[in-house]
Image (cartoon, rainbow, N blue to C red; front, side, top):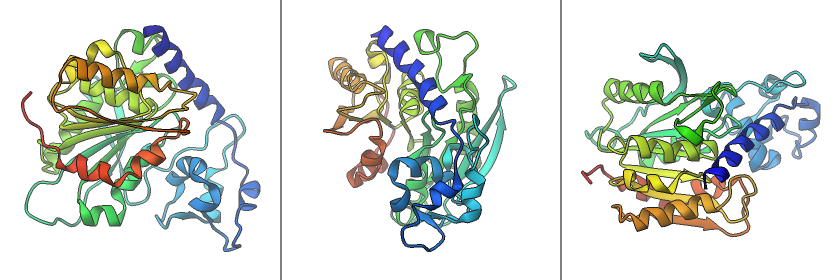
Length: 313
């Protein structure tokens, strides 16, 4: 199992390198099928939109010529994200300096409306190796906020020398550092500043962020009411440490990057450890690595998530 994890995590670096190709704006504009001078999610396709959404500066769900030009990176360099986690213009960008001296950049969305006087829940969204998290923009969308106002944080695990979580086989390179210490301090600071509900703090992440989601609840189970790891992997021996955290994991059955056994084994381990609440698992037949699109489009997921409250295990 540990060998599988090492191989899987090394693949994240390969994926990131593949995404370092320059963006050709002229070639992209050939996808403008309705000739309106913009590129919509439908025209770009779901997979590419995950990279491009962070450049949607005005948050209109499409890229105009200026926004597309901003994506055009030099050959061999990745086009920079406008905001950490690929968050859209509804988010503000902040920096937090941890007690370890490390600085963490993050995108923050704070709801302007509240349906009642209760403190809002908070969702921490961890991006994959490509730098984007689909969850953050889904949660900050007006329709979602009308149903469930919530604070959304999309931090950045920047560069090839950092990962979300720490420990043994999870970080095999001595030059790779986990951002977990400053990440958790930042989370506490935002909860305190915006009076988030400490009983309704959630974490979700895709791919590398799915690994991070598992890792955070293995180390900080007392902090999170629920976790939604998408196409992630972790060490089943840590399952008992996650007691008290509601888990709903998702994975594509044909994932060539993070083996589907990563989620299957963790769910089996959680059940064997008799953790509470009982974990949920959804596997998408015929779906590859991009299972976050299907996961975050699952309406029942969000109803379930916001119903979770932290209780003592």
